[in-house]
Length: 243
Ligand code: CTP
Ligand code: MG
Image (cartoon, rainbow, N blue to C red; front, side, top):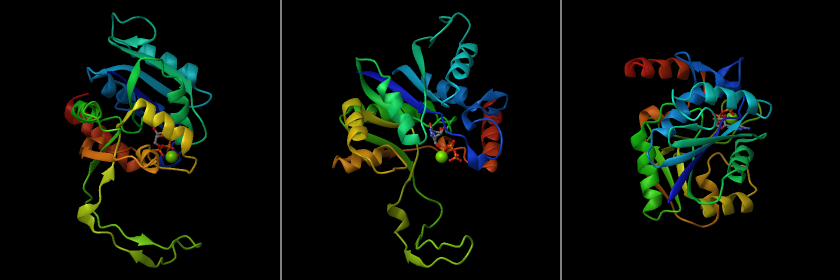
């Protein structure tokens, strides 16, 4: 079973504040996207990485990947055993993932989707997701129990005004979902062809097909870099790893 990873990296990173597109911002001197590609290439099972670049930034991203190739690698298009492709993204994450799937060659039968904004996911998490798909699950998501209790509210039109609470789901049954999410290729392609609602993760599209999605343990270091404080945490994790 050949495995590819689609890395949506086309977002602007509005919540991180002004600057370059989020995936191209540096963590301890190296662009977040490069950390994310390395995290995927670290898995022996991953033979291809498809990076979905900002719509006007595909050439720049391709050059960046070549720059960070290991000495002795094929000068363009691969890091050791891992080939890479770069395609331009779309207006939403969902659309960007679709463009990545469209670029997959024949012969790939397992697809992972991994946020460039989760640059520090350990290889053991990647391998656990791949293994669960190999064992027959059509969709696999890494996730962690929640520290905070979660309340569903009725959002108000006025920002900052008190919001009525609607429900409090039992915390012990909730999981905070990360990436990489892993899929049987044909299942994910069908989900993207069928589901037209806006979603915030890929697995929920497979749920909408009526198929069983399963959760495997995620990892604290697979957190998503979203707001400025997350940059502080990410750089501290890298310093602890001496990268
Ligand atoms: N993404 C994408 N195409 C988009 C929007 C998002 O490929 N049109 C990617 C981002 O690059 C990121 C991942 O989806 O790797 C998760 O999205 P998020 O953390 O929301 O990143 P941004 O959309 O860039 O951030 P923000 O929502 O703060 O603007
Ligand atoms: Mg976003």
